[in-house]
Image (cartoon, rainbow, N blue to C red; front, side, top):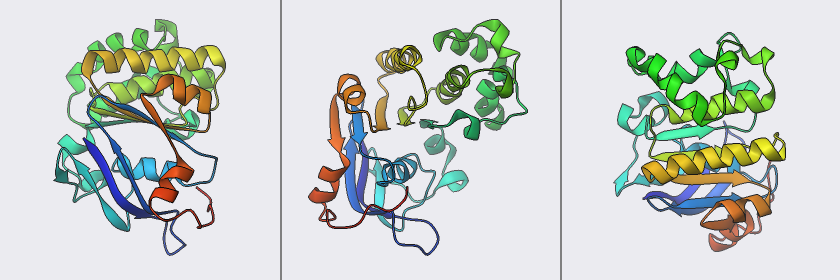
Length: 230
């Protein structure tokens, strides 16, 4: 189980973006986190993925408290998460061909020899054709680049997927294809999912349960706080 207990998180010395929020995602469960832009849900997602250290509270994985974040976290914790962000052009190195982008986590973890086989496996799984793999981000559409970013998130076979507004910039057909690719992966592996978004219809169709941000804050006594920028 992935547990976020009484999380308070912010940036530098500004007012916390998230204050005293708790959320759980069970093994194999898909949870939608629904809220408007700027409410703090993306910050909470980054805390869940061990990309942002909270100022208070704790993250617990399978009963063990997480004590280190980002590159200081043990490799087995870092690689347990696959994260897909809203804006693929901000999360992709513009110098890399899509094939190298997908293989990036393998090279970073010393598994270079697996790169070719893994790219060949994951590219078709997310709907990328061979000709697209030789292109760089500026040569493909947002949807094609997001497909590559999803493949990159899956290439290390994570136990948890964090989809932070993954489809917000995409058309309906690409959205359906990416959600299906995520669900195909989860069906094979039993991975848990936290899907962050503001599209209620999508999250309720996609996830086992959907949690509204306002309900989270009410449950933790934070309903009266203003919604700061995300």
